[in-house]
Length: 336
Image 1 (cartoon, rainbow, N blue to C red):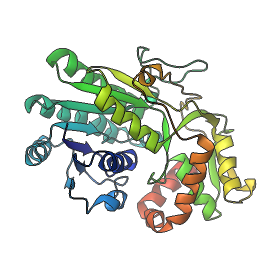
Image 2 (image 1 turned 60 degrees about the vertical axis):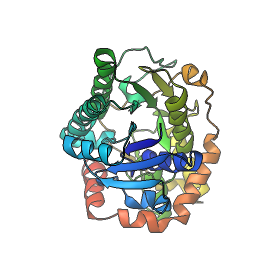
Image 3 (image 1 turned 30 degrees about the vertical axis):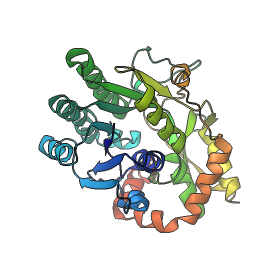
């Protein structure tokens, strides 16, 4: 594992993973392959752009010829697939893009990895493939029961990846992560949405009564987990990645406002989205056996994340443009 293609590497978790890999493995070559949709941002990988072991390819994982060319050009032996449409709310508005990227895109990567006999295809999945769980925690062997087009498309893509291991012997590994937060996260997700709105003294749109429970994983802990599975994981296996730091959405919004010295009157109840899962929770015993555990406690990670958005307004203010504002209007204003 020396030449790693990181698909979706200009996105949130992908970019943080790229930073981690280049810091941790100075003899690895890391190539970002990204379509640069609204959530893919060259600024996310700008800090490593001058690293001699870094390269960028503008491409779509649904385009087989583009993927094949990138793999051959850079002598890739390993693909780590972050490329996906990821936002549940957008999947409800427009499921088509999710099926194309999350399912067909995964198929293309499997085909190329099989054709060119790569050493590994690592696929990034999500806790949402399991669906909600009122109590307890999901193990990797539990059934899938996705409730949104996003979750269903991720489940479909993951099942394809597993099928290529079972049918063709393709060397694959999978990680299923919980809600992740930290630097470079696009503004539509809850934590950066709440932070940036609060900085601007704009209302924080909170779904329903805010009682939905999510485990919150700091992005560099997530990157380390993927690294551990790449180097120590068993081929054909999936690994849950979680922090065991459950908080309600209301609690998170209040903590953000307190960190920014903003009033709780900014919290504005928004019409809940359809089929909103109340709680996700994952058992990480299997990943822990490989030597991984989260290092960032939630309150500390949230404080550092809030400060990052305060200090990096030149990064996020240009993102609040026409396309984002159009989406915001449809999701939070017109649905009232």
